[in-house]
Length: 569
Image 1 (cartoon, helix red, strand yellow):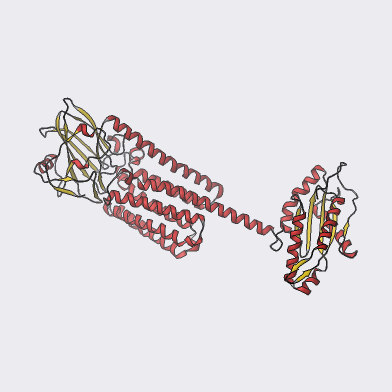
Image 2 (cartoon, rainbow, N blue to C red):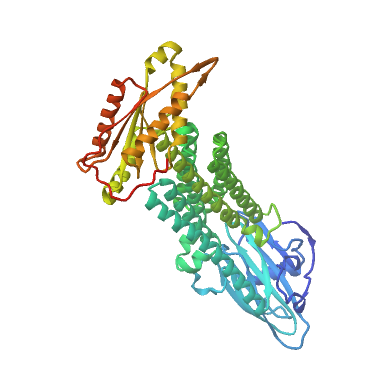
């Protein structure tokens, strides 16, 4: 933190900072403790001897592994009565925070000792920072602060009225409540999706969000406040360990989401190797109680995390998948948030509450974009599945349904005809002399004729009719609510339309005709196959009758109601 030359204390009027909205770094003096720990009176002597420097920033930021710092804040109460204020050091990860209040004669009045090296039980649960209620008598008072931590040394100092502190605390809990509630909702939703769809990407995403939530709870101090208040040893390691776990979970999720293990196998192996190397180094640092080493390792790992998340996304960008694009936007947002927070707590940019929470806000946006990316992937899978189903059920040449689709669709039509005693007819048609057409003009011309016939059948059939390419040059129509007489009339109209067609193929005009066999469902029919067999028999009769004609199997034992059926054909 930049500072000016040595100087004496600069008293600040208490009433001039009643709003309490800005940190008081510009009003404090600072010096760095070297060697053995100083008692408060030795620190005061250094301040009085002008061995300290005046701060030029609103917040002291000294980085990871910085030595202990002393701060002096001189307050002037111009009123005739004692004023009560809340002294807040709004940083949740300081190992040692010692506060000394001196009166105008520089005599010690009150002392407070706290920090993450001690159990949280002695601290106020009104804030994750360090809160002290000070009574300032008329005249001048000095506040001496000694702060020490291997974590990033960040010391935002506020002097607040009771109402200002209450407003600040309310905003704090509402904002964090929204963030955690939103993350928990996404975690629960993706957990349910995993159990419903059995897609491991949703489980990995839920784990990724869960670990980030715990990491955020750790480095904001909420974990020490509510979850492990009597475990200062775990508080010492919780933030770096959970941040590394969060980064590892994010990389594993990205590998699964982007299908890197199949699409970019070497990149996937490289990322997993980096995760393993950092995990081993982290275990070594924790086992050896090298907290500063672990903190630097965490910072380096997060740099790798940011670069790898972007690299993996860009490696798959050529896929032009909507899900991949959402992933890239999410990665950029998350990286920016982490970078701003890191720069803020390291002192590369001026510290602010928004900067400190940038990683959290970035993660909320990232989580939303990744949820959209997962949703896009689900839509892509569903679309591909539907397309595959359509291809499996569609004749690729004519675009009509194939025999597989017929046996999937026709049972419902058959059951409806049986249940309500409604007529159901089948027409089987076969193009005449089709082999001769292929032999004379080539198979390409035959394919063109089949396409034209398919279009004609689709145009003439009702939406409720089932039109199928049965195989080769043979087609099948299943007509609900249609008796044999109506089906025969419809078939005759199709025959005439087809015979009148002049099909153009290149510079040729092709003429085709077809033979039709018609049958209506009987009570004695045990299955739809029997109906089709009788229609086939009628087609055989039409072929032997000279082709280009229609034949109908007799209507003996037909199960229909007495009222007439209006033929919509």
